[in-house]
Length: 141
Image 1 (cartoon, rainbow, N blue to C red):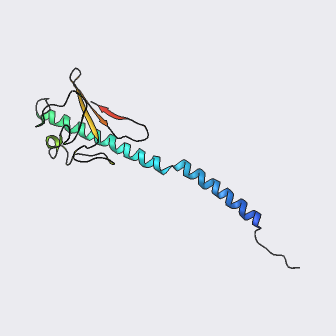
Image 2 (image 1 turned 90 degrees about the horizontal axis):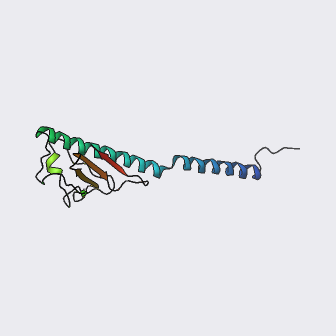
Image 3 (image 1 turned 180 degrees about the horizontal axis):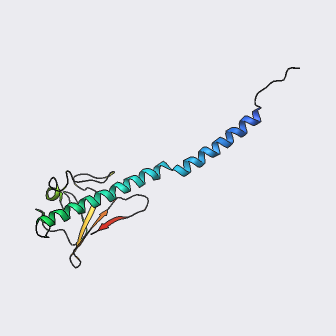
């Protein structure tokens, strides 16, 4: 009698089922959509820090007063860009090469960030308007 060697249909189905479960668990653990959203949120935080550093450098060069053709930083929350407070000519290219924009929604009209100056404390707050994953990205200095 010759004995056939190989896998049975049941063994193949069970193996495929186990592989499908492992693949599904791996995709859930890695979650590429959340990873890309986290990366864009990190980029937003870096952009906000860059803008605030440029504002502080401008102020340091002008005896502690931020100088801009659009006037002083607004005391109410205002979008950054040509539709709001246009800060581009005040900090670029002297303090940063180009004005950073939101990785998904930034345009020259609205770069995706808002700014406000608290006149009582003298602190500037910039917020990422389009942060993802339900997070709010705000930096105050």
